Image (tube, rainbow, N blue to C red):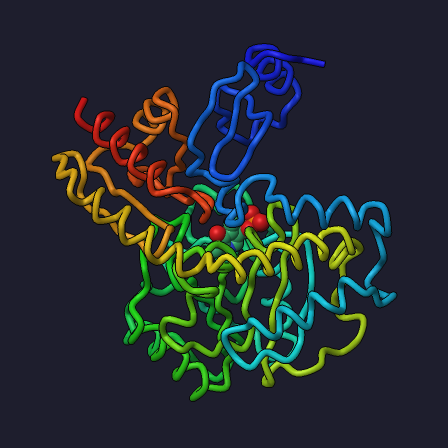
Length: 390
Ligand SMILES: *Cc1c(COP(=O)(O)O)cnc(C)c1O
């Protein structure tokens, strides 16, 4: 067993694919909004596993649910109903921000997007998909075809045909692009990876109307914004959006891999055997998700994210550092756009005990667990102020 940061980092770097820009510390333990590296150093975690631990690291309720389910049944294919899966589906329908009727369970965000795109073509019999500039929807071929970043796309072309990107927030551009062969329009409510860019409510509602007028389906990607992150259970609630397909993943199961597509009446019951996945809705992930959702509701985490997010952004804005171009976000999904590249500053934040993420080249992104304390956020603001003063 490798023990120190150095031993673990060396071993992992020797064998890893090389795909990731790995940080020079090994994380070995987490609790709430804190993580520890292998040398025992503690960090305030505003990476949150890339936004997957809204309920906090090793949330005790999630841990207990996983342990109990592991002793009962870990795996059960989707062709057999299961008690935890059935209950989770009912729970997802109950908390959906629109009249959802059916659920498809999978194992990640990109799988949820992939499934939604396939379902849209299946149900409408149309080919066209409209996505937006700066969008991020995942890395498998279908989801990648909806993603905007050319560096992610170019090495893998040709991608799936039929995709088109229009400017996010531009209703006219969408109105010109949408046709009677458009199967779906896919949108994030807040563009996450693309720079933490909150969408405009009027635009999002107009996009929904345009879809209705043309018989196209609206796919809302709430993979990053879901489960309390933005100050509501789902960001769609801010604008009363009623998508036909809603993709979720990241924080759905307290850190356990899971994704889901929630579907409305225009999608209906899908034809059997047209899509599927071996692990989708496995009981272990379902038990974790049930515990995570219950925790989010009983501890009012969406409200907490709204309050703490406003507090955090106010304090970041008050820093008034010339290096900061803009502080923006929704709830505890927060971006600080700099006038310089973010990478060096992320390294300095880490040295000072704060883990944060990039969102594009010049944005510092903060996705802390929603259980983070006000005192921890004060510390984060102080460290950001110090690092950006240098
Ligand atoms: C992270 C993310 C995805 C992809 O999820 P993975 O689990 O990494 O495949 C898709 N859409 C959005 C908005 C995301 O933030």
